[in-house]
Length: 164
Image (cartoon, rainbow, N blue to C red):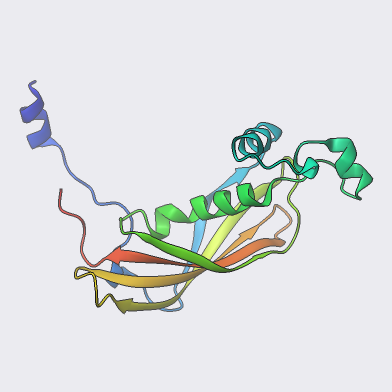
């Protein structure tokens, strides 16, 4: 089968949600979850040059009243943010930022993070035709259902599925 024949038979499925599919107050329980292990933390901390010994020195962390190495908070942020992408922004559109970011509890090696988001607001973009701006409040939880992080995030969201 030649490539053009294969492409003509392929079914293009759009990913994510479009602007009209979001309703204020709508809640998403992001389904995957992620257990953070020591390798995740070590690699992230090294690659981001985060040389706080809490993130890589167990004895130092214990001497500061932690049960073990603390997971780098920005790895926690990136993980929880990533858990929300499939439901909120996978459909495409530029990320506009995060605000009201709060770290509530430390995360430790082998903690499992889950996330949920609530649609806070939406409006049509006046400067980008074909897009709306949607704001969400996202919360991340550990395996004990304790909120470890929360933040507001905004994205431009396509009004209709992208045409390729």
